[in-house]
Length: 185
Image (tube, rainbow, N blue to C red; front, side, top):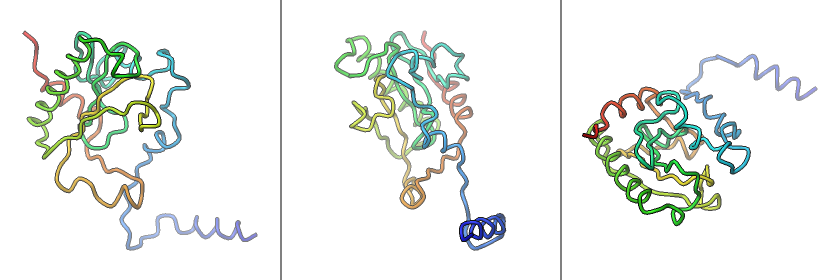
């Protein structure tokens, strides 16, 4: 009876103006509920193995290299958050061969240059989370984060609402960054 009364009250309040501004981010539920998480560690389930098999826009691929590619992060920390991934399905940096290590480094530098030119960040976070215990969302496939940062881009939302405000759609960011990526001669 009490629960029914609570539901009726909350339903009656939907849409009633109050002093709060709300930032609705329903797309985050996919991440929270693990909808995009692979069912297992196999390459068949790996989003980083599947992305290169799609066209660039559908796979969110910004650039394709010889041994590695650059893709938008599906759940970005900030606008333009890129991932540099080897094509091979390997988990550890220590498993990468010399060509993959060299191209990951070169693509990370190019990603920074493109982002500096296009978005003018004040800094970057670069890094790899090796293993699930270290924070890797997709631990089975090696990837390097390239996260542009701006002064004041961290605010109260992640702390009180577990929400990130990302003002640019992934498709728009991918198209803009891919168009700005230097063409090889």
